[in-house]
Image (cartoon, rainbow, N blue to C red; front, side, top):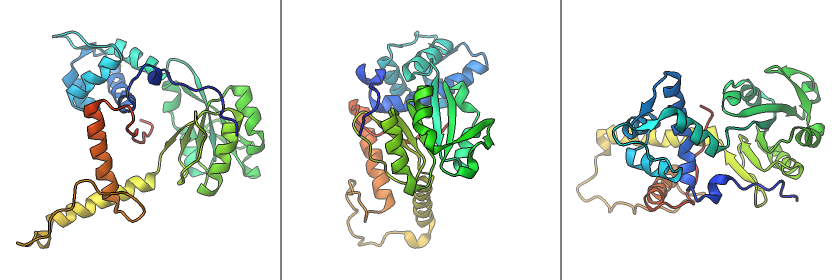
Length: 278
């Protein structure tokens, strides 16, 4: 299988940790809101609060960009918007194809935030012949048989998969062989890709299940019957192995602990959280 076009993001070559990369869109969203209100400067504390992180972490993240702000003044909002946009590669046009134009694919096609964030929906693709030629968000849906030609003609390197789980791997393989090197996967399945191809997964059902676990735990803590007995068994160790038999919360807690250690140690290898369009 072809590995697609060379794909080495500038952030990796410059040694910016993946955890920092994952927070840059949060800072950019907060800064864009400030810019729209014509706010010229912002302190690290104000920006950290708007982005949902602590100010020390924000200052460390910005140090990787070479931006340290001005004591007593803060950070220049417009310059930071440009600097983060450039670091994320958003100062250029990124053509994107969406494969699978069901309810979810159509909703993604209608999302108005792509263009303002440097992404252009170049094509909508579906395997259903009845969908071919049908306009969605002002774009005519094209048949999957034209996938490779569409990718080549539009110079596409980013693909979005919104197909049923059973079709996702086959679509992924065709995208990669055609030259796509970054994939956003909405299908409820794990994709196998060669080295050099980046996959980001968005699984709404998993996120809801994690929330259900926390709701159940909060309900148990609020119940009087949940009070521990006088001779309760020792608490479970903080590090709980994850796996098919482990409870959802065990995986979440282990990941949170790993993220905290990675942020403390500057480890560039921690997982990026799933990011939905803002």
